[in-house]
Length: 159
Image 1 (spheres, rainbow, N blue to C red):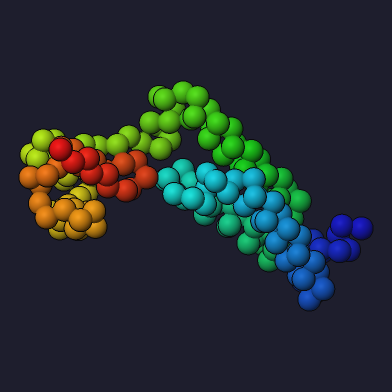
Image 2: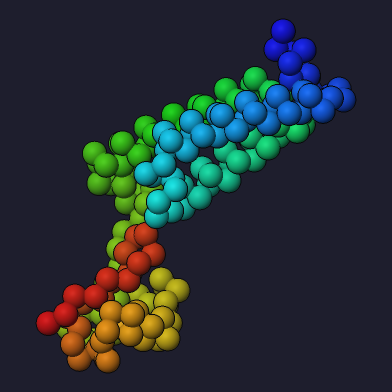
């Protein structure tokens, strides 16, 4: 019955079968987003970006028939579960959190810029000035620490 509804890989898929695939993929996509929403679609880490790309790619292949439908959906669900397990394990163990999400980097301490850390983090002088302006600061004289957080935000703590 499923083959009649969605067709099979390697054969021409009718308009109705493609529509049925689209509906099923859409529903699965909604379930995935609801399950993974706070982790994967809030502030994106590298892990979240990879997860979203792979899941989107899998869903696209399942919908167009370029990959077997049911095995591709099963693989996608396995990825969602793995992502959830990693997210929960990362919340429990800081070493895993640092491995999967990274660490914050202090770029300015007591108004002194650490250019080596900035270079390694890919942050330039103009990025620092922009972050300062965004928080309403004129310069580094007011700054105790300025950190590049692991989600990409820049946090400023004043004196």
